[in-house]
Length: 127
Ligand SMILES: [Zn+2]
Image 1: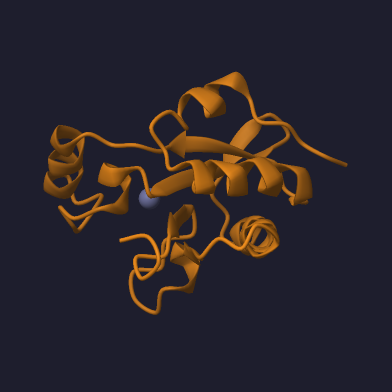
Image 2 (image 1 turned 90 degrees about the vertical axis):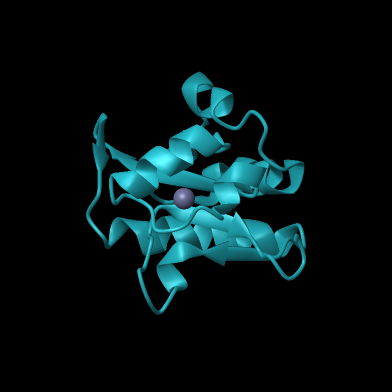
């Protein structure tokens, strides 16, 4: 079984770093769980709004520079947020990143404020 990115997901990749787009393109072919892209590049105004709403804790988000994407698991025609789906998607992202030699960080691996839907290019390699 192989999934495809929807046009809506593709539209949300506009302005995202090409290396990260390449990882997404490979991950969608590898993942056992379908996903959509919910957000890529974010404006400073939207980031400020998210921080104010408590949905984000930093004004220094990787989304502001196109170095991050958020995904949502898509199962049986709907978005699902159950945690166990996200490590399975992350495995596909990690395999895709390894295949293209891209340094990728999964928010689900963060020891604090774990962020399962979030993937970003490693700051050490992509400042
Ligand atoms: Zn994010």
